[in-house]
Picture 1 (tube, rainbow, N blue to C red):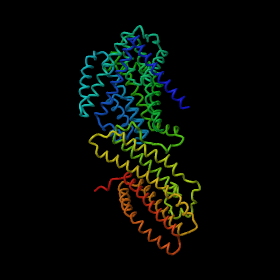
Picture 2: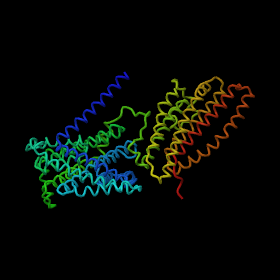
Picture 3: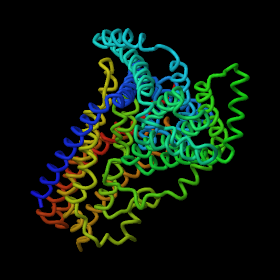
Picture 4: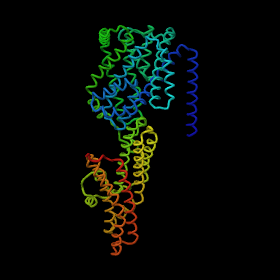
Amino acid sequence: MQKKIIRLKSLKKALIFALVLLFIYTLITYDKVANILAGIAILLIGMNNLSSGFKNFSGGLLESILKQFTNTSAKSILFGTLSTVVMQSSSLVCVLSLSFLSAGLITLTQGIGILFGANLGNSAGSWLIALISGMKIAVLALPLLISGVLLFFMKDTIYKALGQIFIGIGFFFLGVDYIKGGFEHVKELIDLARFDFEGFRGILIFTALGALLTGIIQSSHATIALIIAALTVGQISYENALAATLGTSVGGVVTALLAALSTSIEGKKLALANCIFNFGIALIILPCFSYCILCVDFIAELLGISSAVLKIAIFHSFFNLIAVLIFGLGMRQIANFLNKNLKSAKENKDRPLYLDPNLTPYPDTALEALKKESEHLYDNVCAIIAHTLGFSRKDIRSSTPFKELIQTKKWFKKEVNLGLLYQNKIKILFEAIMDFSAKVQIPSDGAEQHHRIFTLKLAAKNLAEASKNLTIIQANIKKYSLCDNPNLALEYNTIRSNMAELLRSVEELRKVDDERAYLIIKNFAKAKEILKEVDHQTLGKIESLLVAGKINTAESISILNDTTFIAKIAGEIIEAVEIIFSKEGPKA
């Protein structure tokens, strides 16, 4: 079987290599087509550098704004629009929104608003391409590229980011110029005019072509550059150029869908909301396409625009604005519909829920994701400890005294396989937290962030150790809590009750306001000091029981050892809780 897999991998590599060689040969043979493809490649490189440069130049500003100023529908749409206009990459904003949503840092409604705004902001790129398509921009490209490279090799982060922006703009200009020049040389070789049908048939064909090209290239800007170039050389009509532009909106859903494949169910909901937006506006615009053209011509006349190329930009902005106005009003209804109809079969508690790798370049947000994953790890540890002690999470969260629960509740009949639970529910999360922490890109001056990551890793280590130490006392707790000796059973049931009370206190901590939570955590600090005295108090009590003949020597040693271990587990839980659920003290 292993040899077969190796052979298949080798065959796949050979096939890819052969296809690359064939592709290179085709481009050498048809060098005029190569100009267009080179233009697309250069344009995509430019877009990537431009978005990366703006991201690095802004530092943590983008994530800070995203978290703080997307609390209403209007604000989330505005954020999506402006960030896409600035970054010139709806794909980046889309992936970022999916990551934030998957990490539980924004709501589904906020994410939907950001994506809707990103679609509107994306039309700014069509304006830029339309404006520069009639200019000799190649002369600007090389100075920008050379300046960008010089800045990029400087040590200062700001200069490097500015260099990336210049490189991005330079490649962007160069790519558009290559595409424009390529179409002028391949009029005979690539004849789009054969698809240039009049009427509704042509509109449907070019909408589909626009969608297909955008889906393959995964860049609506590159597709629009192709459309404008084809329109400029007379390959397609004005009407069908607009239809192809509408198609770029439909094809644009591919990026979000691909990004959503590796995200949680919430990310998949957001990708479907994007589909509703883009497919929805296409279904609205297509039946009244001729009236939309009249609207675009009217707007162009008001603005004093006669160029068909600039009218493409007007149309792109027009239908996206219409979509935002229509679907923006129903964002909450769309979110409710998706929440109701799209549910995961069962949330997998055995895998990380919040550690999206796309968050690592954003330190503050990555730290929030780490904190939430640490809470997830605590939840798993808490459930395992409670189950081992003979309680459920429902018992822990209730207000029923544990002495009463012990008397009325039967011990769980099913054996608790702590080794398996540790491997599946603890170790996998612990390792994911450590791995994610190592990949978070902290700036050189981020001492506070470094410290927070270190403490969260320490908390994860304590939780993992607590669950491992539980295996040492598991057998004795079950054996002696159910034994016939009431004195021995009382001691072990006290151990069970005390540990369960600690878990209940943590649940209370998670529900109260910051000021009260701060006081609870201070009490935890006192509890750590009390734990140090437990051995001494227990020793005196056990000696009394031993002298009175109520327990034997072996039983007394078991109680002392198990009390020490449960105190160690409690201490590890407290230290982890102090880090993970830390709150600010009361304000003066």
